[in-house]
Image 1 (cartoon, rainbow, N blue to C red):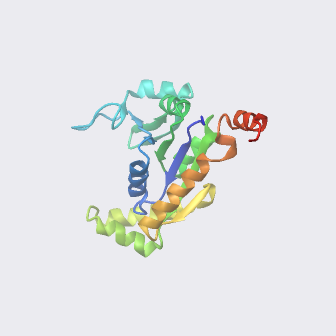
Image 2: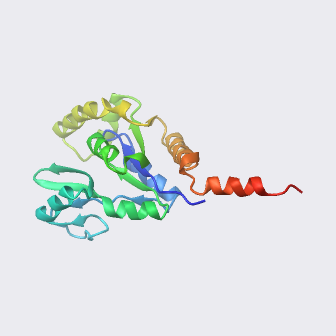
Image 3: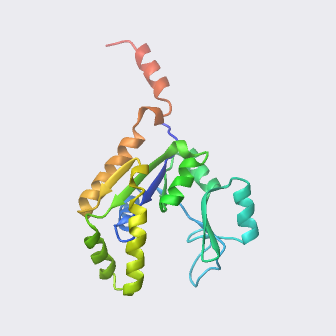
Length: 210
């Protein structure tokens, strides 16, 4: 049966496993579309327009915001980043779901957008803050000062957990992955999201029994 695509928001503090879970979800269902952000920063070597980001100017970006064509946006170190609305709407019409890897602020904006009625939001928690710090240190990428900053930001992120439809504690990656897939499956099967269901039941009721 036909259905309109969903907007799946996945948020978590850094190190809780959000990116890994997003990759696993897309491997499980290749029809999922990952939301490609627009940005005003210049491309880095190897980055492809439309694949890694939609690269644009400050002027064009602000025009899209004024026209309501950004589902969410923010300024980071002088550059603008945001989620264009048009590609998401095109995916929705095709019955494809779009996955957003955004923080709580981006999630708030998307839920408040004209497409907010199609949002399924999921927040991923670490099993504990010491474990979260251990994971961040295990990456071997950041200094002590950067990790301290990430841990401070993590507390701010976690404080918004109650704004989400679902909350998963990522104490076991495989189990969390399975729960995430179960959420998506159930949301897709909701009665109000199955287009043509009423017509199917009507035909069913008109059939003669054997």
